[in-house]
Length: 278
Image (tube, rainbow, N blue to C red):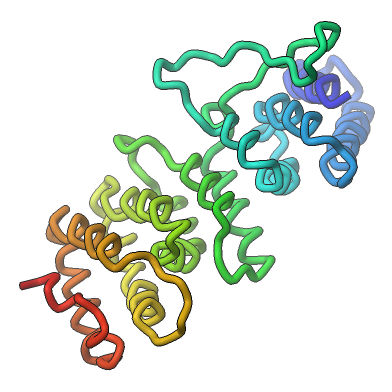
């Protein structure tokens, strides 16, 4: 059903004007979108059906942006093993072979694709950020960072102002993740992508937007809270890498460390940040 619905949605969007009565076409599209909503919104829908749906519907996200919230929500709920298969790009760029989900020769083969090569990445990232904000999340979970990093453009691609708007919405979650042992690596990928991005105006904008949030993150990390934090050596290694990456990051980190020393000296004394700019 999910495959048929996806094919019909794609066909209707590609149909030439005048082939169908516009009102009838609109009603048909609305009915098909309702089917997707029900399949994606019911807890009894199997993970296999959802996996097939994520692959089938990814090409419909651009023409039907109304699908994005449910699509992202389902992707986040998928088991890590299933989700990672959809977000992992083959090193040689090849397409995975069709997969049989049930160990029965009578079961048909289904194609699994790398959805992050096909989806509208900016819109998916924007939806993820909006959902986190609306839900009032205290922090990202591993699946949020996994989806976010899969959305990020390749390193050589420039980031526009719309990506900076996404960064503004997710930066608090990303910097908190930077000091979480389970999330640290994924957070460094995101921060590095924005702090070292092109063009220069976007890079400077992301770095400037990070100052206050990074300061609060350092305060949290070195407060006497008893919470498990990332090993300080890992955090300092990343900060040194960013310090050495260019003048903009060096100057920003120097400014934040100086402010941290002045505003939160007790926490600063617990750190090894004084050696960052020896």
